[in-house]
Length: 496
Image (cartoon, rainbow, N blue to C red; front, side, top):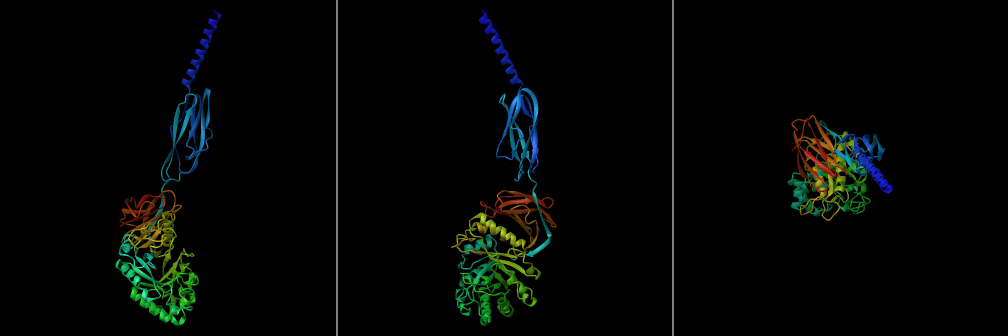
């Protein structure tokens, strides 16, 4: 009897305990005070509140997200109620869009889960200001060289001049006039496409050089007049629009391609005494490193400067800056040869060259010449003989196709955000070229002033997967439009 009574009371106690536990679970709760919060784009701190009752709780979130540094990851109690404020850190939103991340609250007593969604605002587009009332240099065009490339095929010429829009050709004037045939054909094709031709000389006929070779010597002064007549014949026979009487005079001692040396003084003497004989505008002096020491003495003498049409140079040893003395003397500036290795098929390297093209325009150069289009070079080329266009060709075409001769560069925010470079042009329609060399897309607000009749612009883009692809149009509102530039891309906005 006593045993049964004991079991009865034990049963009652267990029953009461279960009821209490059941009631505790029924009353247990852990919830966020709100379901969502919004945080600004800049990095900072924020907080939320957890309301809990008879519950132990814990929070979790994606560890790879933009939220971290919680002051509490767990808390609560199974025997009373309260609230807990939790602070957390968040990173700056460097994307171009609004982003979200969930924080999960788990009631460890009941297993119930609730969610707090944190929304971080998108950055405002970075403004690019473009003002057509502020003008810089007139553009003569974009070009390439056919030196040592043989006779360019009709298909190749069509891609270069028509598809990509090149408007300048640089040819090599061979030291033997019997070898001019290929460049005569290339010059004729360029002129037929509406392009102009620059002829550059690597070496005079070797019999006139000090060492009887095409490399390492110098042109003997007694042959200056003969050389001038030789260049005149070349200009008339090959149909040159411009002449440079020496390519890279500062490299004669070491250039294996066959270049003779000229001092600045020698070049200036030839310029004074014989440039008129050539009968064509002179591009001077095509230094390997665009060295102003080769051009400033001539520019600083008004009687000599008058014989120079254009200051030219290459960027292999430097020179990517504003050549102010030439501008002050009202001379146009041409970058007449440069390349980036392994740019033919590689978008990253091709975009390095695109940024260089932007730099040249920003430094008030009126022309940019790519190096050769030799099909035997797997590193540097634009188009092959079949007419197939390489990635480097499409990148260059983003400039050459729409920044045509006669356009004038106008003021634009050049480097509005890291890895983004912008130039703009007017006369015959507005053109804007934007290069994004960065690894992430970036949104910009392109805002125009002192323009009229600009309601829409067409868009073409080159990237790893796009080749001057047409991307439709953008509409302007209050002379502005927003646009997201994809990572690793060059985008051209053009009015026509």
